[in-house]
Amino acid sequence: MRRIYSPVLLANLPEARARAFVVLFTFDAIARSILISVLPLKAYGLLGAAQLVSIAYFAAAFLGLGTNLSVPLLLRTLPRRWVLTIGAGIQVASVALLSLESAWTFVLGLAMQGMAMAMLDVAINLYMLDHIPRRELNTFEPRRLLFTGTTFALGPWLGVYLNGQINSNLAFVVAGMSALSLLTFFWFLRLSDHSAVRTSGAQSPSPLKSIPRFVAQPRLLLSWCLALGRNGWWVMNFIYVPIYVTRAGYGPEAGGALVSLGLVAMLGVRMWGRLGQKIGIRNVLSIGYGCTGVLSLIAAALAMAEQTTACMVALWAAAVAATIIDGAGNVPFLRAVHHYERAEMTSVFMTFRHVGSLVVPGVLALVLWVAPFPAVFATGGLLTLGMALLSRLLPRGL
Image (tube, rainbow, N blue to C red; front, side):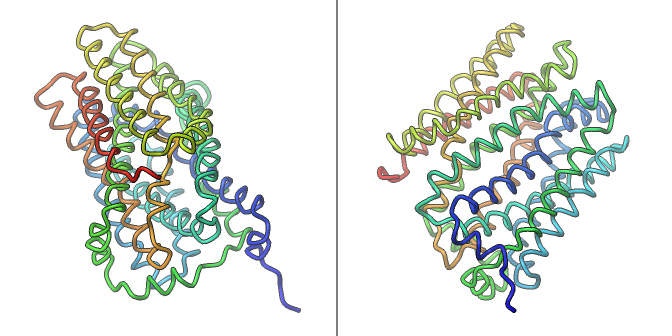
């Protein structure tokens, strides 16, 4: 008798299909969010200077970027399910290294975490593109972001609290268990690979050959730049806000709480998604980027004036404005990519995370070399104001 696999059920039940991918993305978000504020604070404690923290993140991001570009090559030689499995395994190993009290193992753990993120990002997004029809993406993305946003709203504070008040390694244990839960649930679903993706991957002997094709499509390039700007601001926020709060004399839980409070607005991400359906993703992105940029510049000015409390409020407001950007999610890319080149184009597109993790700490390390700490917030503000102008190039009908 022929077995009935889960993909058959998912193909016929849109609600079950959507729930399955929301669960996958949520497990992934837990593994990442619980360490968002823990890692920069631990790096600051191990290395002793904000500039050295920037250099550590900059160095670790190189491996993640290279891995991201190599994923299509892995997909040619390994089934996609094994790429995802290897990524989850590396995630667990990276958490173990990050929990150790050594600067070298910490940097190695960061690098391995970048590798894991690359594999999981590409594999999960490819499965999502296979099983979520294009017409459902505008409603699926806000729903996904609602659940992952809730996780990111609680994770930064919770991770610092668990490590500081209960056990110094508990947050790392939670992150590892979340990665294992993702892997277990994925194998329970037994998702199938789409033939178009497999065929496309076979036609690309080198992942670097996908980059010119990606750059040659203006809508894909624009979606990547906008995603890079969004991710770059969050990288700045996640790394430097906890450090700023600690430098100001507050406890580590205060820094985690400030990051979490800014992300609480993610709970309203579906509202921004509905607003995007009414006024267009183009306008939502312009508003979100513009407000984030202005508030970040205000925070920088307040930090320079040593108005710590007011600066923290401005940073919180800027994070709330940044959630407006997340309401659009990756819709500009998802609506532009052709189905027959999803593997290559998704791999290139997802490099925005690793390029952001590479470029932002690198640039801010140089900024901190010549300017005081508040300049990092000013740099983030200028970046997002530039993205507000760039988002006006999106199609009016998007």
